[in-house]
Length: 270
Image (cartoon, rainbow, N blue to C red; front, side):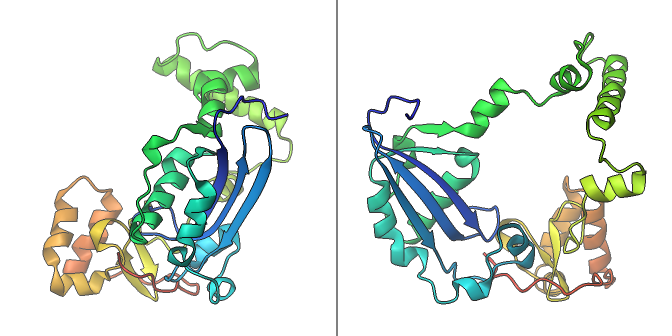
């Protein structure tokens, strides 16, 4: 029995896309279950050609390649079918409010179809999870050390709590690596396509490209000659130091060497 009393249908859905930006990226897979007030369930599934290359690092997450979607319909081809399935239902998902719903709304806008998610109620499992199971230092201390966090948000109390949490984690998870080098690689993986730590600049086809905002996809070398003011804007504003340094060096004609792996396929600038 579904635990919620529904007064209209509920769509539980999940999206896989070419990336995480609703404006710049595109949906490649959409799965949904429509639950009627009487408990009846109907499944919907669409595999879609995004019309832009799928970055290899994204394929590594969801397994969908350009080859898999090459002969599939686009979102625009299926937009009316998807809209009919969704109808006037409410929404449910995991992190749907921050990712899936904005992504869906952008795709409908590009397809020229009016879609107003604000008229629908949202049940987000992630918000319930984070509300009922806080993921802060006090919660971690209770979980791993079974003691309250007295003096929370004081530096001395917090640093002792952090140490106790770490010790508790190694007692609970006996398979954790025992050396810092392996621990660092395991829990702080470096994306080899990032030219800077934040990923605002990325390697695309052997060149550094902008990975945010209106200039997303623009190559750094091209910006040096065509729009140096944009690079100067990055340098003067509150961007990470390594991002600013790469832009400063680019204006001097100095570029870092590309990574020692096959570079990512070109993305269409948005």
